[in-house]
Length: 594
Image 1 (cartoon, rainbow, N blue to C red):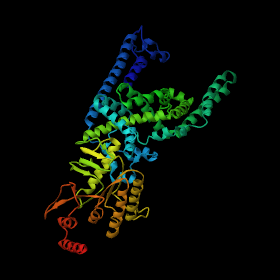
Image 2 (image 1 turned 120 degrees about the horizontal axis):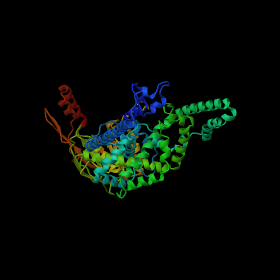
Image 3 (image 1 turned 180 degrees about the vertical axis):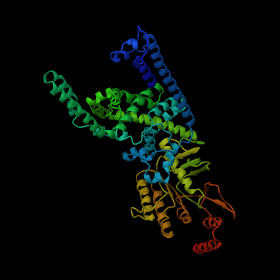
Image 4 (image 1 turned 60 degrees about the vertical axis):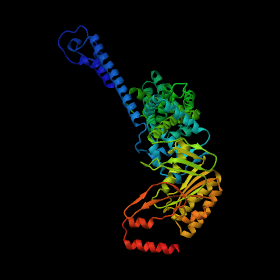
């Protein structure tokens, strides 16, 4: 629209600048105010006031119409994109370093279950987060990332499910809310969570200095009738000093500007959401958002006023901006804003949390729609797990598995038969159940417990740790957690970094200890001996395959009982290894089993 306004102003001021012969008795233009001296109005091309008014009005109305139509077209296009993308697999485009900042800098609260880094990496949770993340805002992304790490059993899950149900029943409302969230957008490394948590640390010291510096030049101007040139020169020097103060202080505040800008957007979004999301929906999240906005009613003006051009600017092109620089308006407004945010810290955090919860709820709904089927978790008190048609959410055409595990289990089976995938699917569903109330199974019954794993153990060269030392440390943390709280424990190839005799003995001792704790343990192993040693405490299950001379096939189905077959040497044959190698391996295997 600005193009149309500029054209209208051009007509208003510049039309009289074109010479024309003839007599003009009536002309209308502000341009006549700055005509060159010595030239009369009759020597210039002018138009009468009515014509000028019509043309100017046409340009302005055209600009308004263009803006309105463009806005409607853009809105319609966005709504169509939201509708199309809802239930689709999102693109894996996540800035994990930015998204993870609130989790890494946050504190663990007493009584909460949290997923540690080892379990997160074991289960490839970054990819799962990207599969789940269709959030429109950085607030939603960061909240969802924290939610998959840390969750409690204090009613928050019911609150989140109520919000998701409300949006699921009102798809038109969901689209309108998505549109507003999209306008907030994403801002990586915005630093908002740290800013709100410690806003008083961002305040400028000695605020009285800036107030005095803003007033002094005008005091000098008032003294001009008495001190003449001296007062003028002093006023000019003080104004120049204010420009320098504005510049250097602005450089100092650059690191806070992304946080302030983003908070301003969140503050605007909260009001817009409440205007669209009418009262009476019966949703707790909407009521919480309204209460937060009510508490922040006096903050909106001060924050938006501090948002102009990245909080502090040295742009001299605008006369209004120049006046703000000379009077240090933005610096003085900044400190007032910091003071008000500090006074209403909890309300500010509540506002951002409400927006984040809404954005994350839409992402969870989209994730659910993208799945072939899903279910809500059902929690039980017994340390048992019942899953029906469970599958791994990252696998296309995944083979579902069903099992009723009444106690801890050892899972044996051949290489590549599906043991590790089943363990990961169980662990992932344990996390998803508590974090987002969504299980990739038709039935998921389990106790509410901490999910912890030891699967993808690696040696740590930088720390000088061998593979076995890393394994022992990983198991030790499981034992420590199991001693403090109920756990769902998943171990793949326990203690494989040492010799067979010690591995079996140590593994059996560790697993028997876990059995005596309040811990439900699933262990995948190739050591058939463990199925016999742990037979009275652990159930036995296995995965198997079919191998012919020219073909190998897996059904990826869990079956009761220990594995009766091995396939390592047969896989060598299948992969066309030298027959001499295979014969020697078979002979050595027979000798070792004697």
